[in-house]
Image (cartoon, rainbow, N blue to C red; front, top):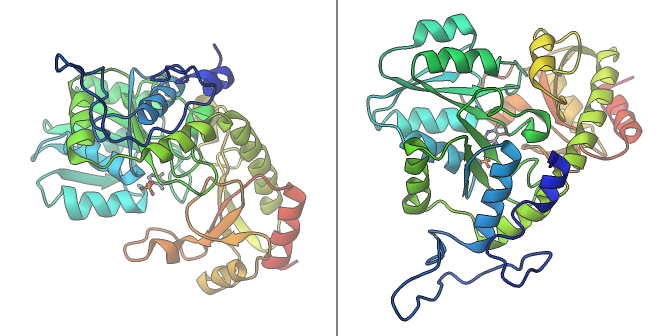
Length: 372
Ligand SMILES: *Cc1c(COP(=O)(O)O)cnc(C)c1O
């Protein structure tokens, strides 16, 4: 079956004995043990497994084309559990512009516990130079945040596998609608489901999908259950419900963002626009090769300085000032201010998450905020 169909039907028949078209929310945190002391499958205690979590995990694993999925209470919890599946002394290669929260987590938690990490501008050559015998994992985030750099997933995955290294791709921005890392050779996919999977700015969550149910994934599963950063049944239910419309929301985000990126490119107070769907993007060819659509995120430089960028963001009327992304409403932010200390965002950079409003309304608001 095709993606759109799977997004609507996958996971419905898991732990759903009443055959309800919309499986009920299962708030119970315990499940009955039979007279012989046996219990059914994974259902015992909700930290270990819950019907709504199993349904969502099956759904997201199906959409990414993996054997197994594990849902977490946030994207960062999913990232942390993945790194905790490694050992002290292991080494990872990470993009220098990795999502800022993950950078802080790696530096201030994982490295204190003995993980070694190189933060680099990722190309085939730079990665090759940093590979050591202890390297276990290469982290890819493409498009990257906030400069929308594109990394060739297929090329880096072959390099990694030649050296017995696993590859994880943070697929939060593109979603499986626009990019399928496991098909391109990656081993694992990470999501902050707080973004497009949730899609309505009302859920915090994360997930890991693994191509194979191997030992490494089993360790992540163990950390999910025993580390305990699991999502609530209600959040899992809401995520499954949101995911049913993911394909069509993403098509809308792609279409609107392409229009807004074109509009910004022609605006006299904008000097540069970073969007992988623009032919002017330095890695447009790689983006075209590995993406089915270019997503809803755009970064751009305003003419002037950091203060001008901050002021422009202050003038929007329809577009909301907020961090994060992936909602139906359009939001924007002066990224450097949001990232705070250690930010790698250039001061003139504004980041916009293009929502599903009519693009003409967005362009009118942008025009008045940026100055005609
Ligand atoms: C938001 C985000 C995360 C972190 O997810 P949370 O759900 O906020 O913990 C990780 N990676 C990317 C690319 C993100 O945008």
